Image (cartoon, rainbow, N blue to C red; front, side, top):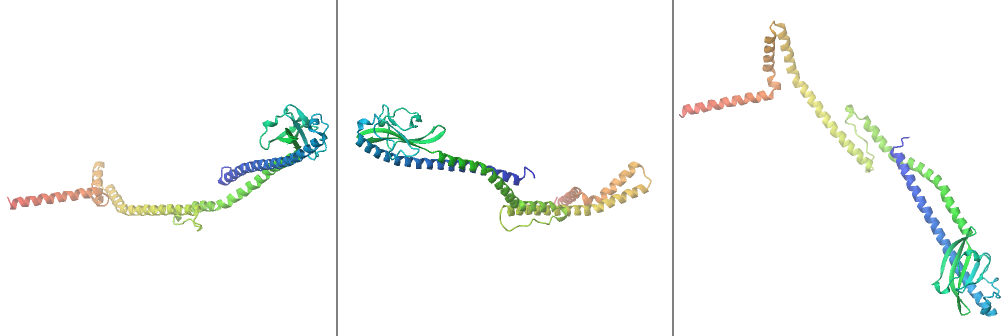
Length: 322
């Protein structure tokens, strides 16, 4: 297999393009899944926050807001504090309450007035595990507090990692199959080119009248065949002209060559000196072959005859009309 052939290059380019497409598509799917997970978890956190606000209002109404800082209010069994859910409450100067494990989130007390809109959500890595935390403000017992609520999202990250590993491990196999398929397709597509090559190589001086077959598809290969056929037609016409010229020249030169040969043989039969033989042979050959292969001499002779006739006409005119 020639590494520089069009088939190999087409298959290689297809593999490179597919690799880039897989990388872009895989990265896009991974990011889209992550954003979808974040959006779903954030909506769940806001729903839990609404339950937490309702539970806090009920707990404070029962125990009194002034006891929240001393934590006599039972916050452990609130509806939002289910398995895995952590939260903490800040009045701006200190954390009023923190669920077990929430102290590892690493932020200082948050000022409620600094929070705008629906708050902000972010992902934290606590103890090597991902945690989604929503920070927002809430009004409890006529007081605005800053609340952080978070849930672990390790299962979602495991799903994202599974997708990533699936793409990474499946990509080489898919690329191999796609490259083999691309090589086979390029081989099928270039078979007409091989036929054109074999037919063109079979055309020689003996069969210049042969032509490349057309498939009738009116595609690039048919246009290439038509172009080559036109070229072969021009070569055939030129070859025929050269052959005709050679035949005509051979016919025209046959008589002068015979005369030269006969003159040379006659000259050799008679005893003459070298200079005399050369002079006689040259004059005889020039005299007997001039009309065949000296057009310039014939033109010069015709010109001399015309000039002589013109001079004779002038002399007669002077004699008649002195």
